[in-house]
Amino acid sequence: MGKLTGTLVGLIALSASLVHGRVLEDLEQLDSAKQSYDFVIVGGGIGGSTVASRLSANPRFNVLLIEAGPTNDGVTDIAVPAFFGRINSTYSWGHVTTPQIGLNNRSLPYNQARVLGGSSSHNGMNEKLVPPPGGRNASGQYDPRFHAIKNAEQSEEIKFNLDVNSGKPSGLVWVQSTIGNGERCSAAVGVLGGQVKERPNLTILLNTQATRVLPSKKSRQLEIRTVEIVSISSGKKTTVTAKKELIVSAGAFGTPHLLLNSGIGDRKELEDVKVKSIHHLPDVGKGLSDHFGFQLSLSANGVVRPVDTVAALAEWQTNRTGPLTEALGHQLMFARIPPDAPLFKEHRDPAAGANSPHIEIIPFSLGTQVLAYVGLLTPKSRGTVKIASNNPLDKPLIDLGYLTHPFDLLAFKEGARIAKRWYEGPPYEGYITGFLGPDPDTLPEKEFDDALKAGAATWWHPVGTASISPKGAKHGVLDPELKVKGVKGLRVVDASAIPYVPTAHTQAAVYVLAERASDLIKASW
Image (cartoon, rainbow, N blue to C red; front, side, top):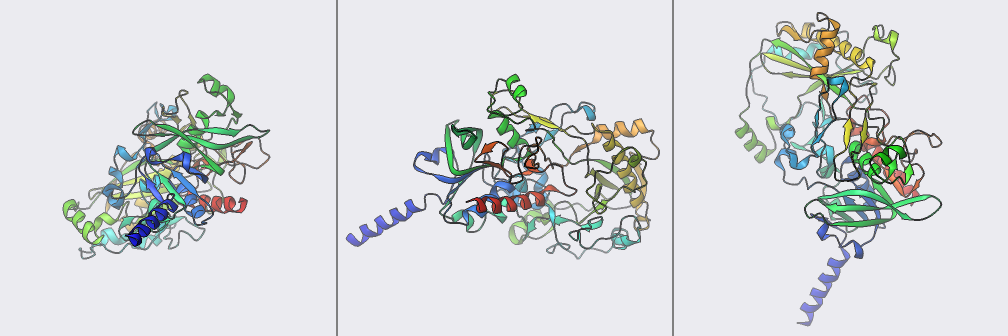
């Protein structure tokens, strides 16, 4: 009996020592009064998950990661790459934008992830360079009309580019996908998976929303290390204080929403919604930059071969192979607008340099029809994120500002011309049978613009709402080390810190930002 008692005591002691190494489904399970954390991270997306993983690799640091949504574990619609478009509202914030002046006053639904892994559990997975993925059934009949794309190097304007990561991304490239072994590889899997979640110094708190950040103590400089949080299910509230730093990684909409509700923003705008200003920082929520695009249609001499979804899902569940292991196809195009295009006589080129593309074209073949999604990678239009009230649970006011800068209309027209020239080229001879439009060369300018305004939609890459800027600059929200200007103890690590939307999908950019932020934080402590 004594030996058994000793074993039980040992197990209890071991359990107590591992109190931090757990995933909590609700705030009710967190006894914050008895636990202390060196770092508290708000938001379990790419930024927050990466920083949590890197910091908790040091056993000296106790880390709490707070995510408003549920776990991604066991969710088929998240794990199956081909199902990304049907992820339901349980895992989304369900945002709707304000009426968009540049889009004929249309309001757009804007799905932002509310699940562990953030947008990486929710997006189209276009990112990492991979060869044509294995695991597909390659026994189908070879049709030269569909494989003529292999001869695309015949196009002088858009050449085949084997290595999109070479620093010269323009051309026809392989789709880059965060897919591994037939499954989506989100941040929840890639940086929090395996033994990371088992670390005794890492606690992951799910289904809990941060509502405000709070001053920790009175001093000459504003110091913020405390966050107020609320249970999504019960409404229970509490606060958690970090001993070293509070890190906000709530995304390009969530981060400014949290800061503004906390009284950090433009003083006058905060007073208008009855929020007490604690730190005048006018650029919070300003400078929203995002990719958006529209659809061109072409008729084609093809055949629709529908996928047997039931059989395909059974194959995926058994072997993680088959057509459901793919998301958005195999190839896409990056292109630069010709330097002699008329728009550059009126507007400065916003691209970062001669190797930076302006346009992305994503093709989809539907048999008798081909759709080309034309996206603008270098928009000049800017939007805002504001708050509607002093209730932090109210949704933010999101104004994307699409097509409010004249450059963007002109650039889209050039992008449509690039796509049209591509599909009129030799690789598609005998396959493309007509251009259905909207045609930038035959439609009057106003009609083309109207079609664009009626059809433009988001590509879900918002950045810039808590922008980084030089240390002494009066503009911006963050200093070069991602610390909130004028505030001690508070950093931001997510897409909101990026001043301009990059000429690529934003997933990799946020991973890079988070890795750099992790190094900066570790170097400080």
